Each structure stands twice: as structure tokens, then as C-alpha cells.
Image (cartoon, rainbow, N blue to C red; front, side, top):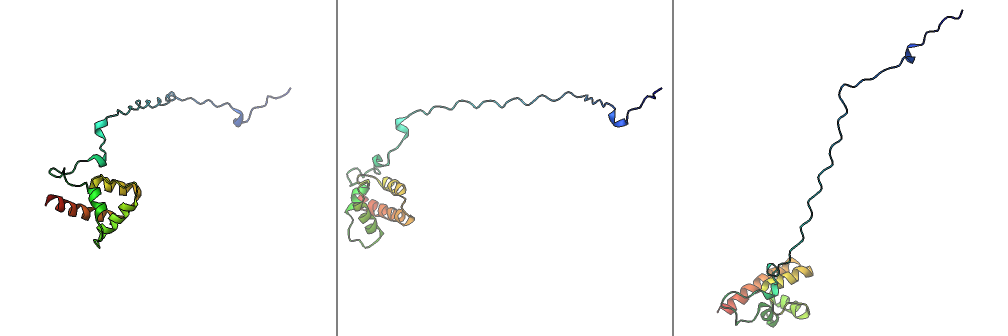
Amino acid sequence: MVAARSRPQCWEQLELRIDDPMPSPLPPPPSPPPLARPTLVAAARVDPVAVEPPSGLAEAPSFGHWLIAQKARGDWIDDLAAAARRDPAFPRAGSADAVRAHLSRAGAEGDMFEAVDDAERHWLKRVRG
């Protein structure tokens, strides 16, 4: 008679039971709201060239025209005026803010902006009397 062989312990079947059910996956994130379409408002955009001079200066030359006329001053304003005369895109009929915007777009250095500040002070003194 053949004796029954017993199985080694490693052959015994293991049963794994988990009492808690597996958590459900996270819900997908909500979709972002649709992007608002920009509304074009013509009055919201200010053209620096069209900015009116301070009150009482309507008859005075624009800052750009005054600046271009400056010659042989021997100061920073003279250098700025010479550069303005050479620049075909310079805002000749523009305000000091239009000149600053033009210089900013052109990548001018800080000295030029200081010269515009000085020139604006001289221009205001001249036109106000």
C-alpha cells in the first residue's frame, strides 16, 4: 500500500480577504469654464498721440513739435531732440507720454526717459508763461 504523502506547508493555498472594498477612483476634475471672449471697446484704449495737452495749452505747440525745434541747447534735451529729428517714426504731434511710449517700444535706456522728463518740465514752463 502506498502511503499518502502529505503536502509541504508552502503548497497550501492562501486566502486573502479584504474587509474594506477598494476605494472608488477620484472623480475627474471639473472642466474649466469657457474663456470669456474679449469685448472690443473703442473708448477703453487710449492712443498716447491723441492725448490732449493740459488745459490752457490747446494753442501751444505739441510736445513733439517743440522738442524737434530744440537745437544747440547743450544739454540732454538737445541730444533727445537730435535723436527725434533722425527718427521717422517719432510722434511729432504727440504728447510727452506718446514720446515715452515710443522710446519704450524702441528699447531706449533710462537716460533718454530722464531727458524726456526734463524736456517736459521746460516745455510746460514755456507754454504756461
